[in-house]
Image: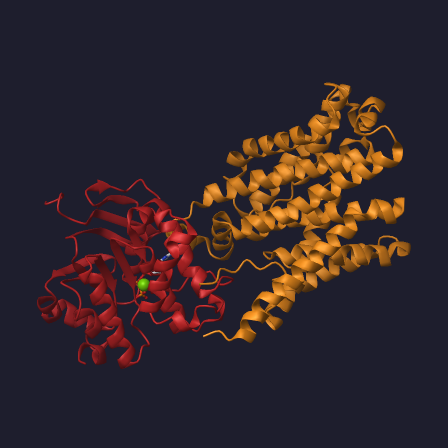
Length: 248
Length: 332
Ligand SMILES: Nc1ncnc2c1ncn2[C@@H]1O[C@H](COP(=O)(O)OP(=O)(O)OP(=O)(O)O)[C@@H](O)[C@H]1O
Ligand SMILES: [Mg+2]
């Protein structure tokens, strides 16, 4: 294995909840600056994999290396400080704080800098995600779409090296989706490594370099997007499930 | 674009609030010159209760530490003052800061043990810890055991020779420490640590994944809150001139009533503790003749608030009118 060059590398990750094995012996590696798409049916263990990578949940087995270092023993906070940032599929806003303060928390504590120094970054993240007009609103008053935007804004505001995105394109209009794709492309071009879980396949496929397929907690395929989308296993999983999304 | 009118409005309101607050503080500080003894007692009792409410709110409302053992630190602070004055011959002026340090140190010892417990177990743990401290103090013969002790006359005289001046000074100590607690809490929430505390209050999962050290945030909050509670305990019992284990470590006086007040006023909002403390005292004074009825009213009110407005009465006002007495909002 080419350990030294990978931005992130997971080896043999496993996690069970009681008798339910949610992640089974998942391994992958991703080069710096690359984007990996993760697809799979509901309950396949995609979000759980993110929980393991960010340290929100401890794996039963397996290890994770980030930028050449074994980060398995570190907690979520330490991994954030190293540059791993995520958006939550189910938004987790600081409801009593304003949209601006939400982004400010991210920029301040992810980098360990002063509030003053973090302000420009918080503002930039809100402008890029289109939340700037709502900056003074309490996050608890936002609708679901804006809460998802706020997830993305906070993740960007941390100035990450590795960005984990969990289903951020669902429910957007076509125009909004185009904007989102442009935003993620610009993040990628700035050198950030990206892992993106997404059911809206056309958005995902316009960005990612590789695709990994999870089913029942197992990695069943990984490779070039074109090859993966044509493989019979993937066709079987997605047949009729997300039909409208595969075109467009 | 902000118009001139908007700008004036934005800045005029905090100024008016600050002015009213300043006038109130001046009136309280000057109270020994215009109020009687009974009023002075009531004022200092109210302000120290308000300070305890602010502290418990920081702990439970912000750091998510539902402690029912704050009486351990109030009592320890009180006893530290009496022991240092009576047995070490220190002046009360020196004993008060040492009482603050002692309570903070006890909290720093408790924290690593108690923080292993979650939710209801943490609450029970703090209670057990406080009961243990009470039992220890009740068992020491040199401190009068269960009967307690009085502050020696020499220590009392060390505050000031004249009775009149002495009572004024003690009043200023109690109100000064209480107001410092309120202002300190406000300053904390406006600082970088306060931003972390509010993030922890709203969402622990997100706070941790955005780089906030939750354990440290909680530890620092727990120790500071305990230290200030110890200081308040010291001045509260300095005013009483007598201390006993049951009074010093009273679960009811220093924690349960405080919880009622904060829950009614609004948990997780600084103003909530203030409103809650005011309501508590109004109810208590209005219903003083009816015995313990005010407790029943208070308890029922707390249950109603918990059922219908989790953020308390202040939470209702805040959502409805967007008011803020002590704004902590960061503007871009
Ligand atoms: N904390 C938990 N306790 C018990 N079971 C859990 C827990 N978290 C996840 N699971 C289960 O693990 C399985 C995988 O969940 P996960 O959220 O990782 O799936 P997913 O691939 O992200 O699905 P979706 O596409 O619906 O978001 C599901 O069956 C879920 O019910
Ligand atoms: Mg998921």
